[in-house]
Image 1 (cartoon, rainbow, N blue to C red):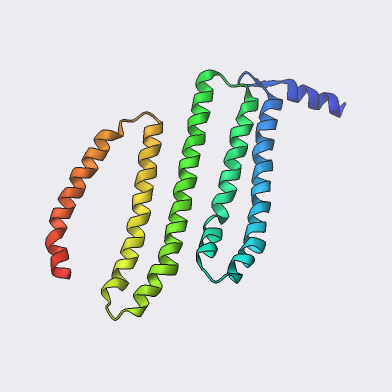
Image 2 (cartoon, one colour):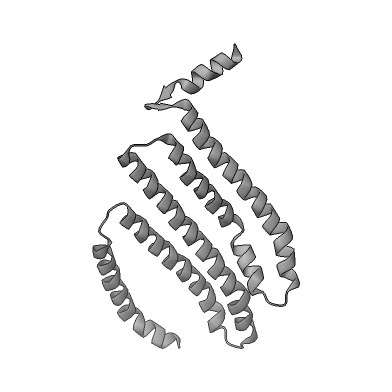
Length: 193
């Protein structure tokens, strides 16, 4: 009786699709998230220990930067494979494809922010600690924030482009705004130095 009820539920439809398709879709996403967590655990506890034993910090930075975004990318693979089982129409398939591409853009931006932030933290900050000037101590946090803002803006523009917005006018506006900011900041920077 339980099996018959389960078969009836899986054979019923939601939004014109069989329930079993949604179960497979969600199951694949859940399975890939679990696989991502397991691989993240392995990277964090085993690979990171090997990286710590080397003389360079660069491999530590790479392993540390890929930690959490790795789960994200594995889950995106699960999302991509999973929605193939939904038997979607051409328009819905295009929407899911755009969502996948947006998720990849977000993941790459997240990874780049972590990687560049670690590069600045492990290579640039020790250099500033050795100098006698306080100027570089104040510039490095500004550089860190500007790098993050730049990556977020680029990712945002790529996402807008994916959804069909014309980003040429936005880029032209940013170019003019950047030029106006540079001209206004010229005297400030001259006085600072």
